[in-house]
Length: 326
Image 1 (cartoon, rainbow, N blue to C red):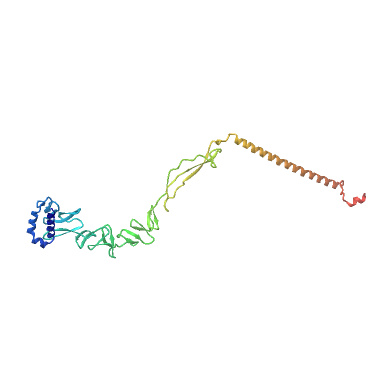
Image 2 (image 1 turned 60 degrees about the vertical axis):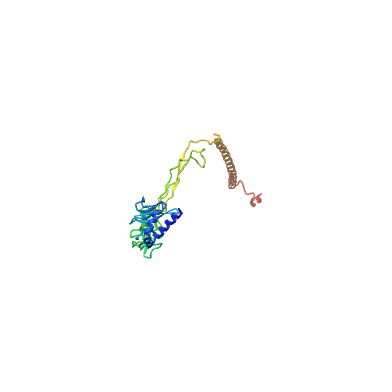
């Protein structure tokens, strides 16, 4: 078996050289007949001769021999045209498929590429990583294309209608430049783009809280109730602002006694306060009467003394004249 495979490999190597194949065409045909497993009645339509182990050994006219690798083994396949990444070469002896250069996805021959691999750009049949100065890269076409004439308000563009960078002070939106962003858009000075506005969104109102006053929920008649709602989405600088997220309203409750406090505690406390107030008032009134009485007595004495002096009944005890008369 090893001897047969070695003989078959030598035949393939001779066929790669047109001169060698021409000189040994008769012997090669005889050797094919001698090797077991080689047949001229192949199932594949393009095969002229084939092997159970290596597929097609030769192809019919106008077919290309293509070697497909399966693991460590290569299988010959006859095709009307070469697969992507290969180009066909014709000769008198056989037509073969030859692999394109690594950066080329589809080629016409070894030196002329028709489509490049990802990351390379086609320019005059050559695949490049960068384009000439007067051209730009096209990722969709994988080609170097001429620089388009940009609009007047555009610095960089893909074509005459799609701008990628606007003049200073302008904002880019969908490939066009704007001095003022359209409705529902707002300017972004960092990106120099018109970005969608974001409006505030709030949740539903909560239930009203129990009526309370100074933190208490009992022992009063009038108090306040509150309710709130959460902000689901805060607005952008030019978006609609958030509405009120809290509300307060007055409330009236049936007056009731707080738990743990006896019903007559408040009345008793009021009575004690009234008694204290009455004692203070009485004490003050008594002091005022005493001050008024003292003031009135002194005034009466002064009035009586003045009256006596005027009538002469109360001479001045220190008068020198009155002393001489005595």
